[in-house]
Length: 265
Image: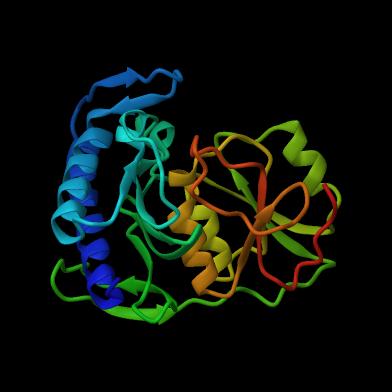
């Protein structure tokens, strides 16, 4: 894989998909349907998926591609692949809360090594550069020419006063019970893969996820966090979270700055 090309393509497609998502988001109404698992899907999910899929297949025809919207028609038989959630945080989109993202990632040997997370309603763009360093770009988000970027780095946390980020739509008692094991200074709520990015920028220290997620939900944020010095491990035994599972389903996990003293499940 040529990482310079990969970075350029992923960034451009995320921005193009974000433009289409915001066009639909700004309309008076949009169609919301239910998928087979009862989760919502909108015309924005489908339009963004079409843009990203076409672009990735044209640029990298020999690399397996998995997207959330096409996952039922694909059986994953690879440990190296591209994986996409064209609109992560559909519930936030439907409720017009703004905490939704475009996620594109490249997984190599079961590890997300490059990724882009774009939050078009919030004007935040995070991605890994060709050398694997994670940056946040600011500016006009020109498709052809990247703007100014700031290298991202996880916090040096104070374990007596941690900043915790948790899901906005999926917070539950099990999550609160685990968080209660830590000395917490403050809590943030965020939707979609933004939670990984808040740790990557140092705005939060730890994100425990005690609930169902799929690989396309997490791969891009995982890559961005890794490129900022962070880690993502299984909730049960604190071994690295890996990708390429037959059903795409993740176990519970913890994303965190490495200096956080993790507590047992």
